[in-house]
Image 1 (cartoon, rainbow, N blue to C red):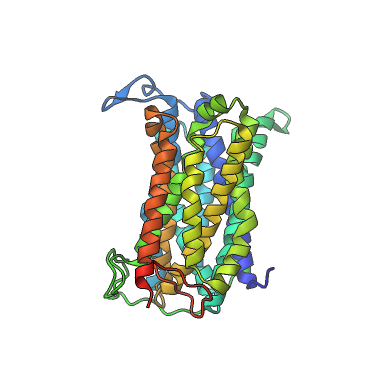
Image 2: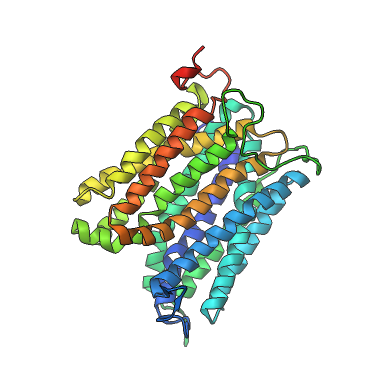
Length: 431
């Protein structure tokens, strides 16, 4: 497919199945908590540090917990993968944890237990995400394939992430299901079961079809942490991988601002939930369509032009979401938002892969995957807090973060593709 290594396509398909399973829970868990099937005694109506514990906040905590535990664990799992020169075993272990935790959701009998399961699921995901990305990087036969590999991988991952919630809603709504006379399966438990199946399909694909390439283990004495400051680079102050991590963090926050504000957005635009679902999916759809061609183009003309143009588009696309007044214009700016994300994500991963030292791609690339996960965890909480200062405020802050990311990338990230046909840099660097 697209001239891509078969193993990369298999990893992409496996990640798609896993993404379907995980995105199921984004829809199912809020419905499950709000349904009353999960006992939550003594929480609603109380407050902590003056903050009322509403049902919406409790749902937000449950959703964000995965992202926080996942993100904070990724540098450690990525480093472990580099130290042992193994990828596949950690991917398989993480997928088993994800499957087991999806089963556990059907067994929990309290909100506290659900939080524990959600946290453990985040740790399981941390074994899958950076090691899978690192393996995609390892399978690139040259720098001129890296962007395309990440484009294919991200395309399938986003297909799974985009369609998972749609299927989840149908599964929950279709319950209960008759299994045998007198035996039924609730819509929630059926959805948890689909998540288990998705993780197991991914496990089987990786187990049977993936042979990881030989790689040198990073020495235990090697410094595998990513520096904040540039190492003896006359034109830079900050380490480029750190800068790309910051840019990815800000980009992910901008993506996650939208979901929390469904009710005020629908009220402001005079639209229903169907329009909101289309607008929400527009970012994913744009990425699905553009990841591969942008990844391929970044392998020909260079990484930095796409990073810069993508961040230039990101700021106004995010700000416009707080200003538009019709469903159609919101759809247009959401599509532009998706275009900007597609132009940034695969080229950023390619730059990090270009810069990763031998045997250290797991650690290096985990900076970006950790940042993305952390941003998707911060975004919903941030938009909920900032909305209290006005509808446009979350989007204005998101746009400001995009501008900061643009300035950092323009001044601190150099082109890494040898023979790139396009040079981009500030005028004071010419000559």
